[in-house]
Length: 440
Image 1 (spheres, helix red, strand yellow):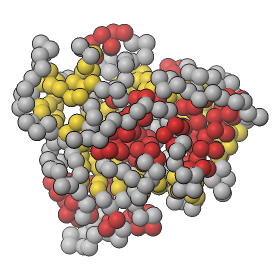
Image 2 (cartoon, one colour):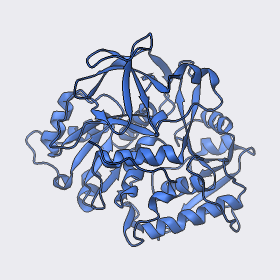
Image 3 (cartoon, rainbow, N blue to C red):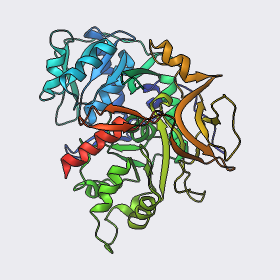
Image 4 (cartoon, rainbow, N blue to C red):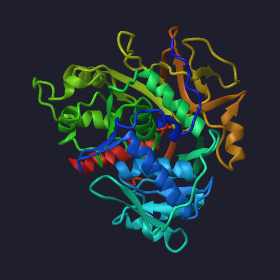
């Protein structure tokens, strides 16, 4: 039985009661540590800078930043002053143009150098604010003078805009409220019994919900510490785990495989692995043999989860020991209603295969300005994921395929890929794969 559900609050509200002196975020490359007091103070200051730059409630703040402290702080600040709209820094100019226009971005946040495709796309249409961080970890916005007070958002205000692709290939806007995100964050935290003793290593991109909600927000909401390198690097991964006593990490199977491939047969588990409470896998199907190998080599239970953007990330997960971990399954519901429906709209019994449908306070209310998609995506208060699967008699969900296959251009790598209709991870997974390729 899961613990009591989280009451909705704002993203900054998640952090308000945490002791100011506790360590919140570590940037290992820059040797920077920020306390919760630092985070709250900086987020408020950056939000007031955004307000001075003309950002109002509901305005979309584009972010194209690498992983790191500046991304986390500006994301939270954008959710306070307006609505955060994070973008993949690896997009091409035409892709940046589309997303900036589609979200009607009020400003675009970029690092002082690089990401030239975004600069060309913004042109003279979208003002660019440069995001810089000094040696002490203080983040500032270049091009902004002064500050303007901001009022705290309501729980139903849109905190985050992400995109998901549809069968036409045109991305759909997914508005996620503060309530959606904080409730989902609580679901993740309870699933893994996160506590102030936990240290997560964020290796997934922060422009997607996997890195934002699971690795970062769920950890911060429970007074833990997030270690956030600028990118995944298998050469430095275990050193970071060891030095910062990391207790868990979440990644796509691509990353898990890269870590496994660097361990020789019969070699002892890497130094630092003894601190891991669990390893989370999400974003694509985890082969049962890989699950076995991860547990055998790294000595920690592997928990496969199921997530999607429209649900503000997690829907289900295999549970922590001593409960059963079922290889090939994405586990049990994590405070989200999950059902199976046939083509006629009938709810099916355990063991019967059909479309996975979901309902819960973390699930969004509909695509933005897309009535046609909404008309076909919701039925009787349930959201249709587009995934096919079945529930067993113990409530474990197994995904068996897609109702229809979507082919799209992967915007991180420029390759044609098969994309799941209902799954969150495609963009994050492929971007992570690109990061792996670049770092090996």
